[in-house]
Length: 198
Image (cartoon, rainbow, N blue to C red):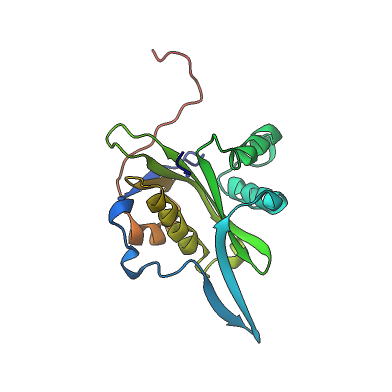
């Protein structure tokens, strides 16, 4: 089985697609780790698959990510949803996965991605549902490293391409996305009301 990210809110969404099979990062991504000096210490950001011991740190990062998109307080995800999502990440029958960024023994970023069928390709495609870096650690290339590892996983699984959505107002993230994929300019519609449309 192949081991294989839509955000809430009312602002317009931007869909980005990239043909993973043809991507070599063109110099944008050179490694999945980065070292730099702070004082006399050298620190490394490492990207790896999430493990079950990461739950407490993962749930904190994911809560921050959801709060960014307005899912907090009375609109926060229920505990059942949070726990169900976590369990799916380690269920061999599921196609949803998580990468984490680790710095100094703690998690500072995450990426959730999902493999699924596509009606216009034989191969599966891969959807990046969530990408988040701890606010205090931004500017250190965490998002770029997570994206690099995400592309690598998609290539390893033999997928045809990858795609993701972001708010049209998320200009900071789009500076990175514009370097590595094409803005399709598709508009995303969503409804939680499953009554028959009239």
